[in-house]
Length: 134
Image (tube, rainbow, N blue to C red; front, side, top):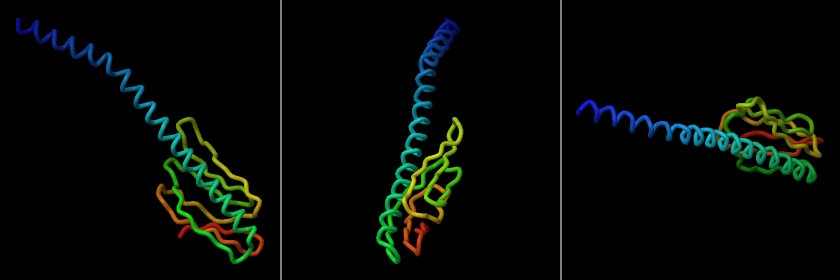
């Protein structure tokens, strides 16, 4: 009798796990996809803000400068600010994804690779805009 009860409990737990496992797998994939989408959105917001403020500062000329607080997201593989193109490459599960912004001005500088909040200084010089982290 005791062994029958034990077997029934084992069967009950197995059926419970059989139904719970797909739900857990779905929620894990959904959460991971949301993390990747959030990182992409943060990266796009950062490059767009740098691009917009670079154009604004460039139109005012030297020695105009602006600061703003920006978030560098997870999964950053590389960054590039060169010419009129600002690029953040993200290391996604499907491969590298480039998020970029085009500027009207010539922009130089760097964006950190480490995740976190940074204060960026965007300063107009003669003929170009420099982006640095304070």
